[in-house]
Amino acid sequence: MAEAAATATRWTIDASHSTVEFAVRHMMISTVKGHFGKIEGYLDAPNIDDLSQGARLEVRIDASTVDTREPQRDEHLRSADFFDVANYPHIEFRSTRIEKTGENRYKVTGDLSIRGVTKEVTWDLTYEGGGKDPWGNQRVAFHAETKVNRKDFGLQWNMLLESGGVLVGDEVRVSVDVELVQQGANQG
Image (cartoon, rainbow, N blue to C red; front, side, top):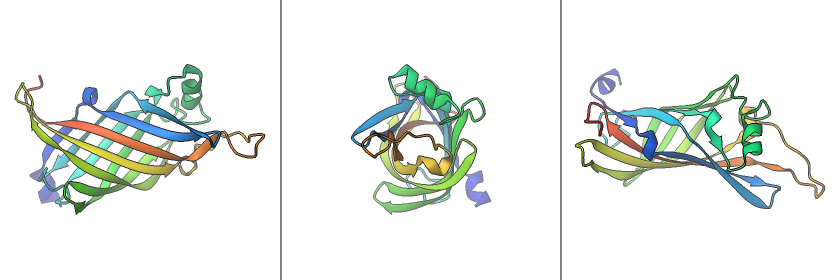
């Protein structure tokens, strides 16, 4: 594995062409969606066409950039009731294994850390393609999806509703679209 890492090409996330979105049930009747405005990270891959050959992925999200288009809710999400960004400013993911499941499709398993709690999570990852941009940079793109239970990461806050349900659902669907640039390329 050390030999594979030594010959790997580093691809860095282009934050201006990448998004991290989430969706969670509200009052058990609708879905609220949001995103994080700042993502960084890299993919080290000996073979970009087959990530199962020793690739490694690390992603870091600035939790304070949570945005659900409702400033009061966003402040609550930044508080100790949810992300507690004063004490845990980042959400991080580090892959531990990548398995090929089909043409341009993978299962990426790794450690997701939110609010000081780390749990193993598996993402469905799709390679969307690659090519050279007008400035000579080699770029690739991926789409990833997973579901997590927010309570597994210490995001416990909720309110009981008069109807017998709860205000915030436990399951959170996460969707990530990233564009990466080969390191050492002309950054145009």
